Image (tube, rainbow, N blue to C red):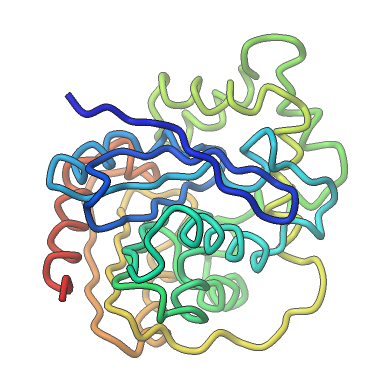
Amino acid sequence: MLNGSVRAANRDGLTFDVHELGPPGGDPVLLLHGFPQRGESWHAVATRLAERGYRTLAPDQRGYSPRARPTGRDAYRLGEMVDDALAVVDQLVDPAARVHIVGHDWGAAVAWRLAARHGERLRTLSAVSVPPPAAYLRSLLTTRQGLASWYVYAFQLPWLPERLLAANGGPFSRRFVAALRRTGQSKAAAQRDAAGLADRAALTAAINWYRGMFSGPIGDPDPPVRVPTLFVWSDGDTALTRQSTELVRRYVAGPFRYAELRGVSHWIPDEAPDRLAELVLEHVTDHSS
C-alpha cells in the first residue's frame, strides 16, 4: 500500500498544504485541482502514477489551503496562482529537476500559463478539460461557450453567490451538492467538495478565482506553449464546449496530442481516473528524456 504525506510550501506569508504520494526519487508530477476541489481530488490518479514510480505533488491551491486564504479578488489573479505553483516546485522538488504538470479545470488554466511563460521548468504539460486562457476567452465571444459559462458571470456578483451556496451551519450546502450533481458529479464527490467549502471564507475564496478573471489589466498575451502537450476533453462536459477545444491547437507550438473521452462528464479525475492516468503515463513516457 502506498503511504502519502502532507507537506507544506510557503510564499509571501501563505502556507500551502501539498499532498505527496509516490517514491521520493521518482520523477515529479505536479497535480493542480480546479473549482470547487482540493488536492485530494487527484488521489485516484496520483495513486496510479505513484504505482508506476512517479512522485506526485497535489497542492491545495490558493484559497483552498486554510493558511493560504488572502481576501479580495485582486489576490486571485491567475498570475498569483502560477507563482504559487512555482513556489511549490522550488521548495519541494530538486532544483535540477523539471516537472511534469497536470491540471484540471482551473488547475488547467494555471498549468497552461505556467507552461507558456515558464516552459523551462517543465518536461510536459497535461491539461484536462480547460483550454488555454486566451482560447477560453475567445470562445466566450465567438461560440456557444458564452452560454455554457453563465455561472462565470453569476460569480461576479457580490455576496449573492455565497448566500445561495452557503452551508448555513450544516456539513455542506445541499443546494451546492445539487448543482454539482447536475453537471455529472457523483453524490459522494459532490458532498466531499461542498463540505470543503462549508466555511464561508473558503467559499468566498474559491469564488474569487472567477472574480479575479476580470480584475486588473489583461497584460501581455501568453506565448505559444512549446513543451510537449496533452489536452484531454470529455464529451459529457457541460461547462466546456467542443467549440472551445477546437481553438487549443493554435496555442501550442510544440508536440501536441488531443484525447477525447466519450461518455464522461467534466469531472474526469474522479470519474475516469484509470483512463486519465493511462493517457498521462503514455504522454510523460513518450517525452521522458
